[in-house]
Length: 107
Length: 126
Image 1 (cartoon, chains in turn cyan, yellow):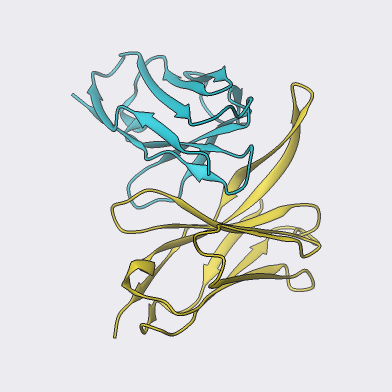
Image 2 (cartoon, each protein chain N blue to C red):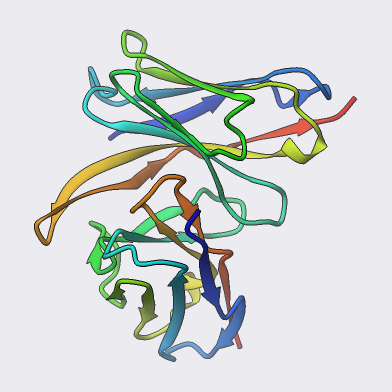
C-alpha cells in the first residue's frame, strides 16, 4: 500500500497568513493526488485533483503543487471559513489511501 | 444538481452485517459512466477507503476489509450498496458514499472523488 504522510498534523495561523500543508507519498504517484477540506460535522469537500487543478467553485486562494512523491497545499490568505481539517489522497494505485489530516485553526 | 444520500440502520450488533445504500439523484441514468465508492471515518479519526464499484459492476476493495465487504450497484434504481459482515466495535464510523469523476488533466485521466454524501453514523454495539 502507498502510505500518505501529512505534516503538520495541526497548526494555527492568523487571518491573512499564508498556510502550507505538506503531503508525502511512500512511492511515486505522478500527479494522481487530490486534496479535500472537511469542516466539523460535514462531509469532505473536493478542493484539488491532479495535484494542482482547482475544483470548480473553489476559491483561488487555494492552490496545489507537486509531482512524484512530494505535494503541497497552499492557502494564500487564510480566512475564518477555512478552519477545517485537510486531507490528501492518492488515486494512483489501489488501495486508495488518505493522509492522516492537517487541522487548521485560527490564532 | 447531483445529490448522494446514504441510508441504513444506525445501530448494528456485533457479528452481524452492516448494510447501507447510497441513492444518487438529480439526473436520469446518473450512475452510468462513473465509479462509485464507500469511505468511512471512525469518530475523531481519519478517512479510510472501503471500496469502489464501476457502473458496469467491476469492484475494487481495500485488502484490509476485502474478506468482509461486498459492494453492488443497481443502475435501474440509481443506487449502490455496501455490505460489511462480521462487524465489531472497530467498524463504528461515519460511512460516506462518493462519486469518482473522470477528467483529463495534463494528458492523463484522473478519477477523483468529486461529490460526497453527507454521511451516516453506524454504531456497532449490543
